[in-house]
Amino acid sequence: MSAIDTTPSVVATNALQALPFSSLIGGPLDAAIKAQAMAAKTSWEFIQQVGLNIDPVTGNKEAINVTFFYNKNGQMTKLIVPLLTIVPIPYIAIDTIDINFTANISAAASSVSENTESTALDAGGSAKASFGIGPFSVSAEFKANYSSKKDSKASQESKYSVEYTMNVAVHAGQSDMPAGLATVLNILQSSITDANAKGTFALSPISTIDVSTYKQNTPINFQVKATVKDGNGVLVANKEFSFTPDDTTKPANLTFNYPNSGANFVGKTNDQGQLTIDVTATVTNGDAIDAAVSFILKDDSDLSTNGTMNFIGTATN
Image 1 (cartoon, one colour):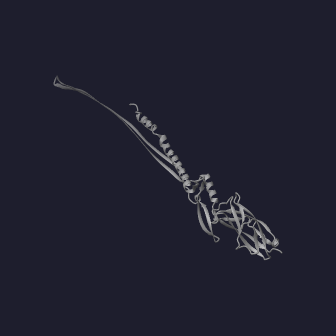
Image 2 (cartoon, rainbow, N blue to C red; image 1 turned 30 degrees about the vertical axis):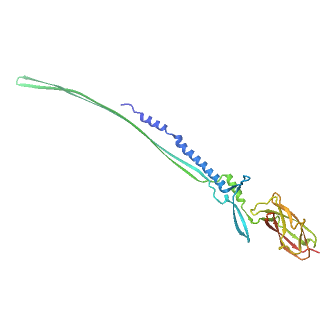
C-alpha cells in the first residue's frame, strides 16, 4: 500500500493562511469609524449652520432665536425661543457591527495504479507418440504454447479550490446626545422667555406708598428701583433713561417734583440693567388717593417701557 498523499492538506492549510484576515475584518471596522466621524462632523455643521450666527464685527457666535408673538392678558407679547431647542439635531451613532465570514477550501488528490500480468504456455510445436503392449495400445499427442504479457497503468490527479464570502451588517440610530451638548441645550431651553415688544420696566419690588403717613404739601421721598429689559428680553446695561409719571393715571392731587431743570427724572442703568431714581412727590390736598400710577421709561431711541406704583390713603393737614 502506497503512502497517503498529504498534498491536499498542505494546499488547504496554505490557502487558509493566505486569506487576508486583517483586511477582511479591519476593513469594515475602519469604514465604520470613518462613517462615525463623518456623522459627528455633520452634527457639528448642522449646529453651526442652523443654530448659530457669527457677528461679522466681533466674530462672536450667538444662538439664533425664533420669535413668536401672542396675546398675553390683552397685551401682545414676544416669545423668544432658541432655534436649537425646537429642531432635532442629527446625532447618528453606530452601535453594532456584525461581520460574518465563511471560507470554503477544498483540496483533493487521487492516484490510480494498475498492474496486469498473464502467462500462457504455447511452444508452437506438437509431438505425437504411441505405445503398444499386448492387445492394448496408447497414443498421446502433446502441444505446448507459451506467451508472457504484462500490463501496467498509473495515474495521479490533484485539485483544490478556495472560496470565501463575507457579510457585513452595520446598525446605526439616533443616539443620546453627549453630556456637553445636552447641557448647552438645557441652558438654551432655560433662556426661553417672553418679552414685551417695547421692552419691560419691572419695579423691584412692586411698591405701595401710604400717603396717610404724610402731611399735605410735605415732600414724600422714595426710590424707584427697576430692572430694564429691551424688546428681546435682554437686560439694558449702562444706558440713560428718562422717567415720567403718566398723567392719565396720576391723581390730580399728587404731584412729582423733578430734581433737575428738565421735565423728567433721569437715571442710568448699571451693568445688571438695574435703574435707581430718587423721586419726590407731594399731596396737594386732603382728597383720598387710591391709584396705580404708571411710569414711562424712555431711552434716546424712544424705547418705551412702563411700570406701576400704588398710592393709597389720605394725607393729613
